[in-house]
Image 1 (spheres, one colour):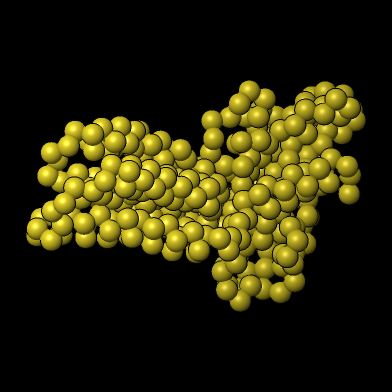
Image 2 (cartoon, helix red, strand yellow; image 1 turned 180 degrees about the vertical axis):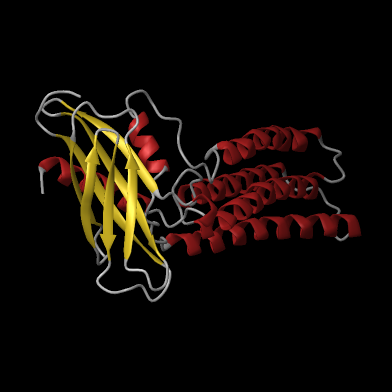
Length: 291
């Protein structure tokens, strides 16, 4: 195979590897259980103290030192829980789609649950609120927590964003990543049957690389693919094509023109069920006068 065709195969393989689902990480389960346990404990303690206050079982004012310590420990526990959650469940990381609900709903429980615990503890420590010094301890922390919570929700952006806004010079790579035809996560309604992209080569000129899909119905053994080049290439192209690894088929170039090509894909035996074969193709200009 030529060097240009090897480049096409390497690009396709690297894109498929990048889109492969990332393995689940072990700390996720531990972080999920620990975070929700801490949030639950904070809310449980706060609800218990408020209940005892309202029932009259706890009527004495707490020492200011204990109120300050409770406020600092509760705020630190809520903040550390959010930080640990976002480190293990970052919203912009390419997790498998089945992790998205855990990330979204678990993040909401951690964010709002930790914010609910702080007012409960504040009411439990300060009720009936006769001492201004107690509220001076809690109010700044409660106000700051509203901003910390919003920062927690905004820290990851959109979870299922399909593609980043490409920077200058990376637009071509971002487009290839979005339209890779071998990505298993594409819905059936949006399956891509052909993908072509052009690369300028200083030595040979413009080269066209492509991934093509040949479909076979039960009983069929031969399929014909038509590929159009728009705009047409300047010289008659030299077509190289072969099936991707894992597909057993032979590919024959039937016709190669400046505006397109025709390929014939043949299976070893007739298909027993509906199937398809992916083909990697490279169209390089032949030496000769321009058309």
